[in-house]
Length: 441
Image (cartoon, helix red, strand yellow):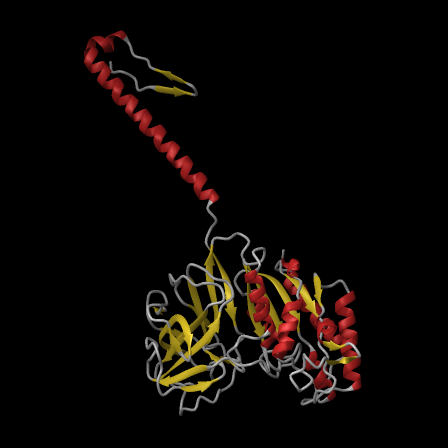
């Protein structure tokens, strides 16, 4: 009869064997069997302890999450590239991210293309301006491990994650090479207030570009996400028209009001976990397609599908009001209730996905080309509804911040860019500085 393995009960070791085992194995054999059993017990308990500690550590370690740090709403059309064709060309887009991270991924787009789009190569690097990137920071973008990808018509595509440490408010150069192919429609964000350089051939890996042509649109790139371990990391989407897009701000200075907000968030330890995604389109409207899809149509793509979105600021509707006075199409005119209903729909859709919504009041526009007394009455009524309806989770009163106290229907002189519709750099700075950051705590 052999010795039984040690049994275990909390706080007690029980060893049992019979006299015939002692006789059969002798003292040395019995101790050898007993020692082996003891070793198995301590190894087993050690492994269980290690597993327990590992599980505790895993439970305490936050999971890696993706958060949008830059975005631009894509639009259709054909940008004047200054070349016979958009194909066989490299497009170097320069963008400023808001939040930083240990790795990133880039979203390319062919959403308005009428054919599949072959991206022959794509790179991302730290930009140093004038189309150049910082040596040693260039990274090849891959797609399921491959350096090229075919994007179906109407679709976006994410790159594989890139192990690249990026600081908040970094400027990145995203270079996209389109192979030689027929391209009927391009997908770009027009009037980006940023210079994109185009060269013939594949120059995605070139630190500097020569013989480059300049355009002022972001092309074939829609978003950038960063990875984070912070449980409270989140994105703020700013949805709007040209005033959110930054029209009339100084090019290549990142002077839009969402840029001002992003800088303030990163400077405050209480809000440095938040990023800002600018989804403004110059000329955009709430319910009609003119410049890009209307806000109701693009809402899912530009807001709900953005990674990590927790907050939304809506500043949209002045173009709908203006075109009521100067209609381009028979269906252009809308009523105050039409505008209020559209804004309410955006809030309802955001709330159904757990997104908090802040309504921004419409800024003054009397003196603009499409201003009218009836339109001004609509603007005042919509603003009153934004302030008092209780539909929004909070109100950002851009109207109050930008208007002339003596003539509330017009911009203050230090805000106006000169067209009485768009702020200048000082106006955008004033708007971004007026937002109470405690609403994001």
